[in-house]
Every structure is written in C-alpha cells, then in structure tokens.
Length: 540
Image (cartoon, rainbow, N blue to C red; front, side):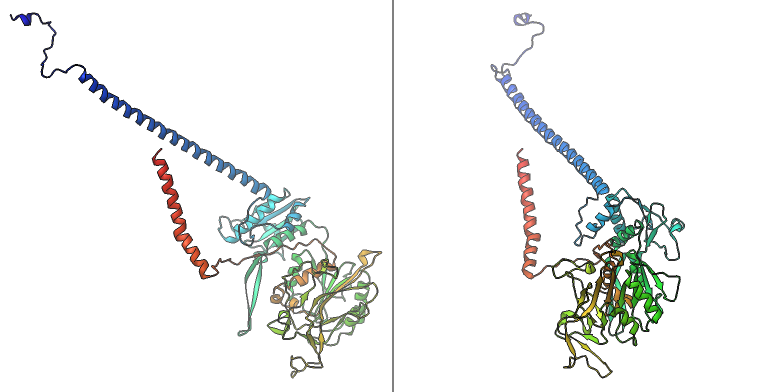
C-alpha cells in the first residue's frame, strides 16, 4: 500500500492544486456578490415601503374626501329641506322665492294644505318647477303641507275639490285651509302670463306662454284661505255695460287677488250695498234711472267705493252718471285724446293708442298706494282714451291724484266725423291731460265711511282679454282696487320669464381672445401641470 495513501484520513477529499483557491480570494468574491444582492434587496424593500406608504395615504385621503363630500351633501340637503337654503344659479332666479312670499308663509299661524295634481313619474319641466317651488314653501313653515294627488291613476282622488266653478285637471294646484272648507283651485293655465300679439295683416291675435306666475298664484291662494274678510266687487249691469258673462278674464283676475266678484242689478232689491264694497262700472251706454242714481248716491255718501271706466264713442248722453261723478268734481271729457307724433314714448305705434305716464310717487316723493303694484319699468297700453278732468278750485276735504297722464304735447279731438284728421289743428285743445284720476274723500270720524272713486278714460283694457294681459294693464285693474278697499294684503311677486337666455360674444376681438384661451392656453397649462407632477413623482 502506498504510504501516502495510508496516512490519509478516510473522509479526506483530494484536491487539485491547479483548481484550488488561493488564500481567501474565493470567499471574498462570494461575500461581494451576496452584499450586492442584499443592497438591491434593501433598496427594493425601501422602494416598496414608500409605494405602500404613498398608496395607503392616497387611499386614506380618498376615503376622507368621500366622507366629507357625503357629509357636506347631507348637511346642505337638510338645510334645503328644512330652511329652503339653496343657491339659484338661473339667470332670472327662476327657482327662488320672493321676500313677499317669505313674509306671508313665515307669518302663518294656521295650517295650509297644498295638493298638486301632477302625474306621477312625469319628467315635464312644469312638474320640476312646481315641485322645486312648493318644497321651498314647505321648508319655510311647519304650517304648510304638500301632497300630490295623481288624478290620472285615481280620478276620484281630488273629487271633494270639484265644483261648478273649479275644473280639475292635470298640473293644477289646490290650496285649502286646515279643514278643507275653504279652498282655491289654480289651473295650469293660471300658472302663466301670456304674451299677446296682433297681426295687422290678418287682423288676428296670437299668444304664447311668456312668464311663470305660479308663485303669485299660490301665495295669493294662501292669503285667501287664511283670510276671514273677502271684499266684494259688484259689476254693474243693466245700462249697456260690458256683460258680466263676457268678462270672465276680469272676474278671474279679481278672484285670483282674493276679491269676490258679483253681478249687480240695481233693480234687484235683494242686494244691499254696504260701506267698503266696490261698484265697478265698465263702459255704460245707457243712463241710470233717477231711482238708481239715488241708490248709488247714498252708497257713495256712506263709505261706498267705485271703479268707473268710460270708452270713447260707444254711448249716448249719460246725465245721471255724469251727475254722480260730478258730486265729487270728476268729469269725463267727450273728446278723443291724441298724442303728438313727436312724443314717441307716450303712444304705441299709433297716436291714438296711448302709453301714459304712471304716477308712482306724490309731491313729497312718497310711494302712492294706488300705484303700488307698478314700478319704473311698467307700461299700460290704452287705445282711444278720454280725458278725466278735476275742478281748478278743488273741493274742500277731497284729495285728487292724477294716476295716468299724457305728455304735455297731447291734444283732444272733439266733434269727430269721418272726415276728421288726427293731425293737430289750431282749434284742438292741447296740453297735459289726465287719463286716470283717483278721488279720496276721507271721513276722519269714521274711516269706514271714507268715499273713494277711481275713474279711467278707457274700457278696452277691461273689455278685451288680450288688452288686459297686455304689458301691465292687469295691474291697472288690481292696484287701484287695492287702494279702493284700503287693503294691503295682496302680494306683488315678480313673474319668472319663460324665455331662454342666450349668451353671445359681443365682438370679434373677444371671440379671438376666447378662442386662443380655450383652444391653446388652457390645454397647454393643463399639460404643463401634468408634466411637472409626473416629473416630481418620478424621483420619489
């Protein structure tokens, strides 16, 4: 046996000198490699931790933002439903409630029920507008409840509100007191004002929805069902006046403002005129009898009120009517008022169609009660008017107010024939004339016995529905009526335009600036912001 082999341990491993590592070189290389791997692993771990940290932070922030948005939305939802706190961004404040309505609703001390007759699941713009509006009413007072009755699905749901004078239809509104013994039906047509236009080529009138007046109608109905006193307006008949049946547009307008219109025939002994009542006379063509004259004379002397309208060229002599007005210094001129051609702001297209000036304040600058419903932008349009005269020497204890006046260049055409021209002649009386006058004779010992008369030298705006709805003509009915009965419970709520506001670019320079800004500047700014954020995150 080889000696060398004899001296080897049994488990010895034979190595090749040529391949054996020299000193510690091999272990150090292994350590270097493992060190590099550890460093990369640590950096990967750190990078992973950073990603995890930023990701977690992003998730937490997202959750917080979502919770905050939900909380803010909930709080504002409560504010809207309980306090009607909303921001109306429509250009004409279409969904806002006026201060006048707020005052009425927040002052309620009894329950008011509002029923809408809307079709369920309808997406019409009217449904949306009514729901928005009535929710604000409900939020303003705990005394208001709102409920929808779908009369399409259940035709008898609102049967208790069906009367001869109240037609129920889809999109109507019913406003009632707590026990539903007093109510008012507002039809869908009552929710709008209509714009009337006249086609001179065809001689036909046309109309379209112009303004939304739903708030005015609902607030007025609330006043009606919560009021114990409803003034009576008697429309005189029997003297060739415009017939009661043909003036539904007038009676509807009065009813909407919480008056009770009634037909009056002075031969009917069952009717008793009382102080504070109003007798309305619209374009009489026949005179009063002596007995009728005495009835109206006694009525006025004991606190009666009268709304008198005349119309040029439709009647004969009316000595008793003239005498009745003459008791208080009022005279209706026989002639026809004409505006001078140079006074373009005081007539509408034709010199016979007047647009008189409306007196808004007295000599001291205080607002006049009789024209409270008008404002500086109001107009009335009255064709073929007569002048109303008052005595130069005013009667003691009587106050006259010129409500409507012409320009100081107007003139009166008298004794008109078919050959008469409307051009001004030297013989024509000219100057500033009154088209409407208010007479007030107060009784300081008993206010209820105060006598008041309003006289207007035009009846077209009352006889014609189209004229009543023209410009602010309807206010010439209601505002003097409020003054006559000395009532201040009506509300004047601005109507909401149904028109669409179109934004337009005023000039080419503005157009170019907007084009460059929107198409170039804004996109470049967004791209730069995105690039900067990307660069910063890339080096995290």
